[in-house]
Image 1 (spheres, rainbow, N blue to C red):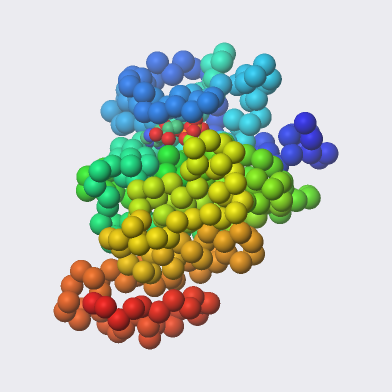
Image 2: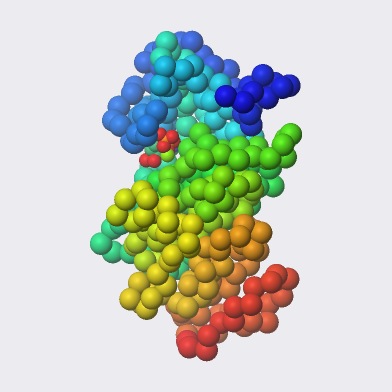
Length: 322
Ligand code: ADP
Ligand code: MG
């Protein structure tokens, strides 16, 4: 493994944390209940703080993985969460504990679960809700990017909701692959889930903030159509679909939603990272602000959207239907 010459840490990893890591057993402070989710090296369980009755999510991260000490990776995940502490769209880190096997992150509980479930459910969300969730995701991503952080694993499983019904606000989780940009040298890695990663990752090309915006495009596609845009029958086919940007924008997939959603997604699912809009530019796309036009025929809008100066390069115009 490449080590950073100054910190001695694996390249790109942060080591500074403020949150104390308590050696006290979790069970003395929390009642640990059901499982909320799991990944390759982590289990997340619901827990209740005994003194306050408050519910949290405890993420148990294994320190040893494939026979290797990975404590530094877990500390890095904590450090990123701390850097994102004032980002309201990122789950808050409450405390940390350490056992022989695990580092346990006590996280703000997102009771509504993954937006993945909204993508695969029988009934898709109304477009006004989708645009609200995408707006919030972009706000979170914009905030991260301003801190020079890239998430690199944005997908519907890592965007949670504070409440399920009615849909609450989004909380971004899982900073295991997140990196800080702008250090020494450029960042190249092959990471993430093929279905959701950008072509530059598959091609081992430099990683930038634009990599996250590709993923926002994939998430928007999934919320709108209920389908994963690049998923093939196997990993090979998925890789090929991503690197060729083989996306189905047919009428069948996009029947229930506006042309503007297609325009938005098309601008993000672009092979060259430098040709993708950044998070702030995305936030001014007309799709994200046009819902009143569809919901209420009375002219509650102060002025037509097309007259709004948003100072960006969006070329999309609202079509003239009501
Ligand atoms: P991994 O790195 O293993 O993917 P995640 O941090 O993504 O771990 O957590 C795995 C799953 O656990 C998430 O997809 C989600 O379903 C659930 N989860 C994680 N954090 C929370 C939380 N703060 N509140 C509620 N559920 C959570
Ligand atoms: Mg995850």
